[in-house]
Amino acid sequence: MSHFHYRDGAYHAEGVGLAEIAAAIGTPFYCYSTGQLSENFGRFQDALGGLNARLYYSCKANSNQAVIKTLAQLGAGADVVSVGEMYRALAAGIAAHDIVFAGVGKTRDEMWAALEAGIYQFNVESVGELRALNEVALALGKRAPVALRINPDVDAKTHAKISTGKAENKFGIDIDHAPAIYAEAAALPGIAVKGLACHIGSQLIDIAPFRAAFQKMADLVKALRGKGLAVERVDLGGGVGITYRDEQTISFVDYTNAVAENFGNLGLKLEAEPGRAIVGNAGILVARVINVKEGVSRNFVIVDAAMNDLIRPTLYDAYHQIVPVIQPADDAAVAKVDVVGPICETGDLFAEQRALPPLAVGDLVVFREAGAYGAVMSSTYNTRPLVPEVLVKGDKFEVVRPRQTYDAIIGQDILPSWL
Ligand SMILES: Cc1ncc(COP(=O)(O)O)c(C=O)c1O
Ligand SMILES: N[C@@H](CCCC[NH3+])C(=O)O
Image: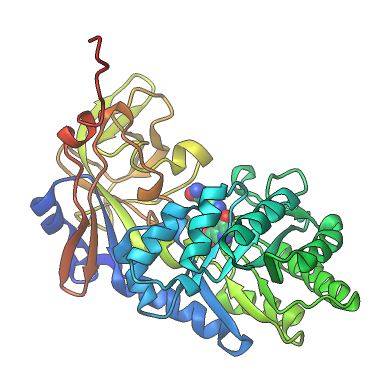
C-alpha cells in the first residue's frame, strides 16, 4: 500500500498530515516517504537476491542527501553521472568503492577526481573516452576499473527523449564495435577492464526490450570470452518504470527473471542502477491553489508550483495524478480543468482538461509520483526560489532542504565594474 494516503479525510505522508507540513513551511514543497523508499529498495534487492547482484541507486533521479543516505543505510551503492553527484554520494555516506560513474561526456578533471577518490567502476561510453581515461590513470599512477557501456540498438519503447539504447542515440559504444574496443581496453596499461554495461532507457513498462538487450549483452559476454578476454561484471543499468496513471509496469520479479534467463549461468557479478523505481512513488509535490479562473473555453486552476519545480509534464507530456489534500466526498462532482502554474509560458501546464473535484483558492493539492526527476530538475526560472524538500518517517518530518531565499538567488549576480 502507498505510504501516501487519505486518513481521517486528509492526505497524509505516512503519519504526517500534509496540511501540517504546509502550515510549518509554506508551499510548494516536495515530500518524501522513508517507508516507501525502504520498501521499494528492499523489494528490488530481495528480488535480485539470488543473482550475485548489487543495487547502485541512480542518484540523478533524486540526489537529496537524505534520500541517498536512507538508501545507503539499506546497502545501496550509487550510480553517478558527474563528479558533482559523486561528491554528493560521498557526502551522504556512500563509500567511493561503492560508486559507479556513467556518462557520455566525462571530462579529464572528472576522471582525475573519481580516480583519486577510488571509485568502483567507470562505465566508458566511447573509444575516445577510454583512451583519455587511460592517460589520466597513468598520470596518476593508477589503473581505472572499467566497464564498456554498450549501445545494443534496442528500442526501449519509451518516450523518445528518455530512450538511450538505439544506435542513433548518443549513448554507449555500438555493439558491433565492442569486441575491438574491449580488446584495446584489455591491452591498455592504465585500464583494468572488468566487463560491460548497458542502459537502454527510462520508464520502461514492457519487459520485452529488456529481454532483447540482455540477450544481446549475454551473447557479447560469450563472444568476448570466446576470444580469451575476461568478463567479470555486467551492469544492467536502470529503467524499470512505475505507474503514473493506470499503466501496468514491469514487476521486480519479471525483471529478475529476464536477468536470470540471460545471465544466470555466466558466473558474473551483476550491477543494477535503478532510480525511478526506487524514488518515483516515494515523493510528492504539494502546492496551493492561488486562483481559479473561468475562461470562455476552459477553466483554469492556477497553483503556486510551476514547470520550474516539476518540469516532467512540460518536457515529456508526463502525467502526474493530482489529488486534493482534503478528501472529496465519494459522490463529489468532477469537472474538467487545466491545472497550470504562474510561469509566463503556455507550456507551464501540469494537466490539461483533467477531471477534478471542485478546487477553491487556498486548497492544497498533491502531484503524485514526483519523487524521481522532480526536485533535481528544478530551476529558478522567473526568479522563483527552489522549493523545500521534506522527509517523513512515521509521525515525524524534517526539512531536508530549506526553501531558497530571494537573497540567495539575486545575490548570485555580480555587477561589472562599469555599472
Ligand atoms: C546510465 C543510467 N543508469 C541508470 C539510470 C536510471 O534510470 P531509471 O531512473 O529509469 O531507473 C539512468 C537514467 O535513465 C542512466 O542514464
Ligand atoms: N528525466 C527523465 C528521466 C531521465 C533519465 C535519465 N537517464 C524523466 O523524468 O522521466
